[in-house]
Image: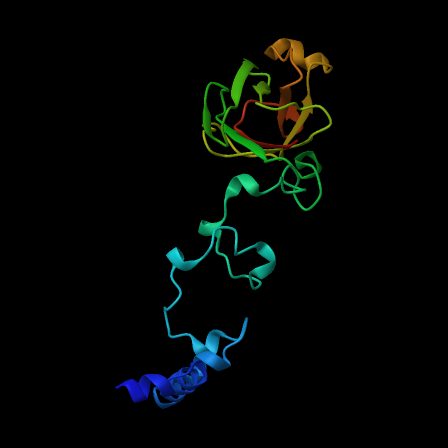
Length: 204
């Protein structure tokens, strides 16, 4: 034993350890340098969330489309440039919703409508009707067509109808067309004013 101790030098010890590592397959550790472990060397699912240092994964480290919507912190997003516009245009640049109504012949009921439309008056027997829309009738396209529905008399003779915005028309006063949301309708049969149902539409 004393003989062994006399011969056991530092160099001998290190040589013995080196031989042991080679035999034990540890040469891989000696060959590893900084940043030499790549994704090919890692087992599947080897890197977990707990192993990732806070702040280590930044935007520049992410591949395009790597993060889904549910993973995004909405408070970090800015305002969409055209959020208040449609195709770069303000909502007022688009045509408004068409307003329409079907009125019975005696001007007492709107049989069907798009919503928010009411009758303001009817000069009985004269074929003059007042109608109020939920939007302005000024500079709007107004179209009116006589209908047969609700008309109990003879349908002989050509029917026609005209409509205009209020309150400028003299006929508006007779049917309480006092606001800029009102319109007056005149229905004709055989060239004369006559009570008859009508369909009216307005494009703001």
